[in-house]
Image (cartoon, rainbow, N blue to C red; front, side):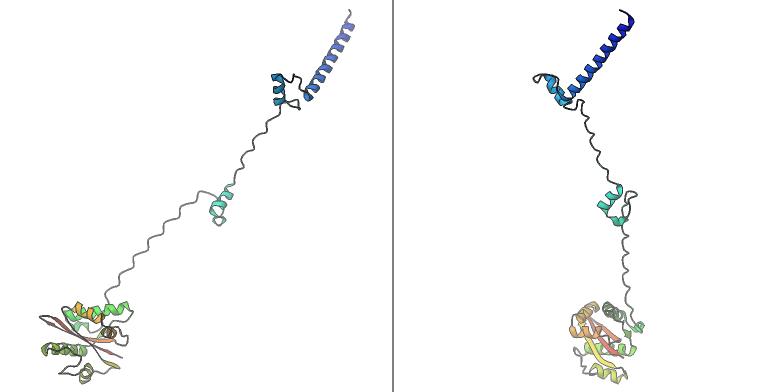
Length: 240
């Protein structure tokens, strides 16, 4: 057989082989080539189906990431602005300074003439006035003298009254002593074991407390006589 015939035979063979392969591929793309009861038939259906190629499993979509700005807005509120860093912990407010304790109220003018017990009484009544926003009493030397006379008179004559058998009323005493003021004649008297107790009695008595806390009363005279049983106290008030 010459070479030209051999070439023609090979050409025909290759052409037929290519056509057969194309026909087989096309058929396999549409029809399962394996018997229905064979394991390969199920395998072909599972992995190739009608497409003729193994389907590509779609990739699982990536979980969308939340922008930091959105996270900040959702959980902290937009008023804090755009997220830039981890929020800092707010500083603990400084503890407010402890208010200063008020100093002892002033004892008023003329207090230097008072005895120790009389100064104590003046301090006690001025503290009560300070609590109410009232000015401290001024001390009048003449009123102090009259208050001492009244306390001594009550102790020596053994009585307890706003009217003295010796001097009369407080207003009488003040007028005779030449005292002149717009408001005159108010008087507090007490007998007690101590000066502090006498002040308690005054503050627990409506009338006596009213004299001490009266804003019109600006001047006081205090006379305290110490006795074996305690103190006898007289307070005289005037105002202008």
